[in-house]
Structure formats: structure tokens, C-alpha cells
Image (cartoon, rainbow, N blue to C red; front, side):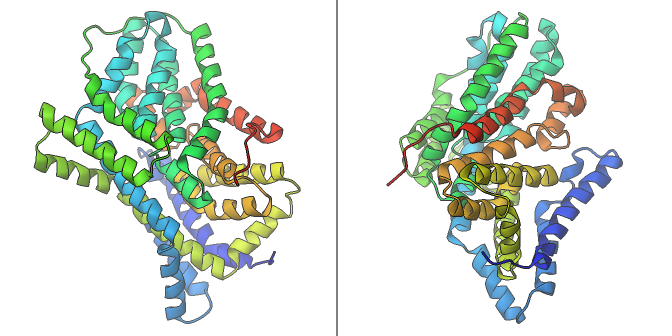
Length: 431
């Protein structure tokens, strides 16, 4: 492997320093969502400018390199999936799918199982919606109200919701983290789901057991309204994706089903339906633009030898396949701690993880799972991440009060490390 050039990493350092530095500054000022005040794409543009300044060759040559990175096929495919996933999530939510899913789950929970029930509901909603933030927004207020009325520990109830949301965000077929992980590692979403699920399920089961043992009974609100028909689009997307259908077709069918149901029950008109789809597209604007910019930045850094240097530094310490998996986990963990955004962390480290995986015979399904698992672990734990900030805001608690009750993210980290140590789950090599 080429030694590379450490100076070529300066643009990435500038990007991360701006992103992290601004968050620390605004946090010190007491600003809400401090680490999200400086838009990540703007910080990326500054890094790109630095890359152009220190890069060799003419401006036209550097621009060609940047554009080739932006237009790389996996980047474009990833961005198109982002748009469709945003459209589906917006349509399904607008026609009442989220409320029906939550209320249906609450209606079948025994009073003695409220806390594990909240975890399961949040897990299903997040898996169906593909967003932990949307899940916390929908379920956390209900959890707070139930905890108060039933005299349950508020922090534990909110922690259950955050844990379930991270479970679904990690596994969902339409989550931006899944999209980024599978596209950068070159594996099918269904295959990554199966691998990821076998590692995450034990953590979820232990979480539920802990909540049953230490939980208390409560009261569930009466007369919860829901429509099973409005849950169909979520189930259809999950089932079709697991069947191996092309993800573009899966999301288009999901959007169409949500639209038909919404039109039938009067949730929106035909014009409103199209507007809702577009609103879903725009909700993915930041991650869409960031993915394009990071693709171009990565190409510039790679051309100057930055990626070679970083990979050489990491690979020199890797002596085995397990070591490579641990290196990938560490790489994305550091990136998430620095950026407080699990999608950004995967987009940044994905290409490096792919090269480490290829050179050390790590199955793409495992490298994609490790990227997603450990980015979600840290995203669900760091008190300055959007998930805990939102949960704290909705519950009136400090994120630090919620952190001790985040059973699932901690257990997921343990299961991820055990999976690396013991090579679990055992999988057949694809021909």
C-alpha cells in the first residue's frame, strides 16, 4: 500500500474542526441543538476550498476530480434513494400512518408492560419510517404523558423510546444510515438487514427483559383511535424489501400505497399528495447535498494521497479479519463522536471502510453492519446528538439525565464487540 500524504487530510480536518468547534461554541452559549447550528454542507464546502488550495495540478484538473467524485455511481444512487425514502416517509405520515401505528401498539400493550411496550413501538415505528428523529418526535410525547399518569420513571420511559428509535434507525430499509452503509460497502439491503438483525436482536431482547424486571405497571389511555389500513404501507415496504425487491421499486410502491389510502380516506387531495411527496424530497436536502459534497471532497483527498495515508496508518495495526472489523468500528465511532451525525459519519468513513474490508477479507455484509451499528451506538448515547437533544426537549429533562437509562445502545455496543470477537453470526460466503 502507498504511504500517502498526511497533508492531504487537512481538508477533512478543517471540515470536522468547523463542525465540532461550532457545536462546542454554541453549546457553551447555551444554544439549543448546538451541534446542528452550522449546516454540515457549509462546513464541507470550506473543506473543499482548502482541498482546492493545497491540491496539485490546474484548477480544471482539480474540478474534474471533484466532479467525478460527486458523480460517482454509488453516490448518485444513494442520493436518489434518499429522495424516495423522504417522499415515502412524508406521505405515510401525512395520511396518518404514524398515529395509527403508535396507537395500535399502545392498544395491545398490557399495563404491566408499558416500558418494554414503548421500546417495541418505537422500534417498529423507526424501522417502518426509517428515521429515529421522526420516531422520537412521534412517540416521546406519548411516553412522557403515560409516565406521568402512570407514575413511571420519566427518564426510563424516554430512554425506552430513544433505544427503540435507534434500533429501527439501525435496521430500517429506508434509513439514510442503511442506505449509506450498503451503498458504500457494495451489499444488498436485505443481506445487511439479516446480518445486522442477528447482532441487534439479542441486545433488544435483553433490553426488554431488563425493562420487564425493573419496570412497573401503569395505565394506558383509553379509546385510542387507529386504522390498520394506514399501517399497510409500512408493512409492505418492510416485507417487499426483505423479499429482495429493488429498493427503488419498493419505495415507489410504498409511496403509491400511502397515496391511495390517503386519497380514499380524505387525508389529502391529489395535488396535496404530490406536494407532500416533494416536501419529503426537501426533508432530505441536507443529507443529499452533503453526500454529493463529501463524495467530491473524498475524491480530492484521495487523489492527493490522504486516503492512502490514513488506510496505511490503520492497516499497519490490523493483523486479522477481526482486527479489520474492529478498525472499521473504531473509525466510524470516532467520526460520529466528532460530527454528532451517524449518516455523516458513515458517508465520510464508508469508502475507507470498504478498502479495509477488501484488503482483509471482511464480508461486505459485516462491514456495512459494523458501520451502521457503531454509528448508531454513539448517536444514541452522545448527549449533544440530535436524538438526545430532542428527547430532552420533549421531556423537559437534560440529556445527561436520560443517558443512564439508554439500555439498548449500551447493549448494542456490547453485542457488536462480541460479534467481532467471536465471528458471530456465522454466514455462508456468497459465490
